[in-house]
Image 1: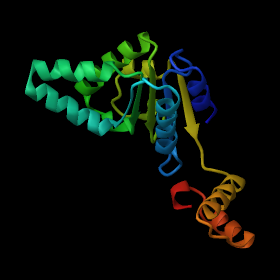
Image 2 (image 1 turned 120 degrees about the vertical axis):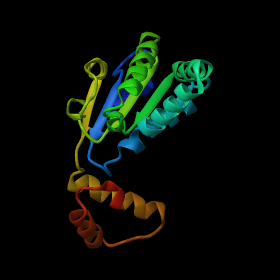
Image 3 (image 1 turned 45 degrees about the vertical axis):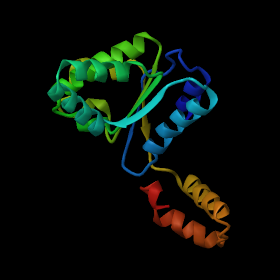
Image 4 (image 1 turned 90 degrees about the vertical axis):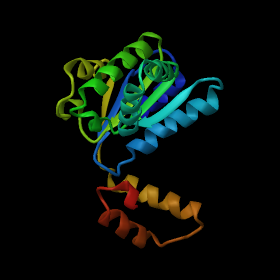
Length: 189
């Protein structure tokens, strides 16, 4: 969260660039990275923000290769013209050598033009199988942040907030029961 706030305050300065967030499923990675993109779009009119999953990026890349050189030029220009590129679930690029190579070149172009890059994964980049060393090296240029399971106090605060949003009051004992029972997946809360 703190790294995301720093990025919002210093857009285009390569602070925490790239930001690589990893953690188990259901802890809010996608929510957090999309929130950064939404805030930049809201507060910095004219900034071009693009969110994609690595799977969709891979499919678009493969389709561009199949369609020929004109489609590849369009593909490259598209991704290199954003002020913020957010790519979710980067672990799915494992074993996709050519797609990783293209991401490497896009990364370099964005980074050297002070454009922000944010990635998410369910594991640390060192543990993504068949990830190219040069791409791993780029991920390490910025900040790699691990999202851990929320503590009891945080889970309780989430439940209280959700109850207020829905005007659905519950007794503190009930909220505490759910916060104690659901420990590993914020989405379930």
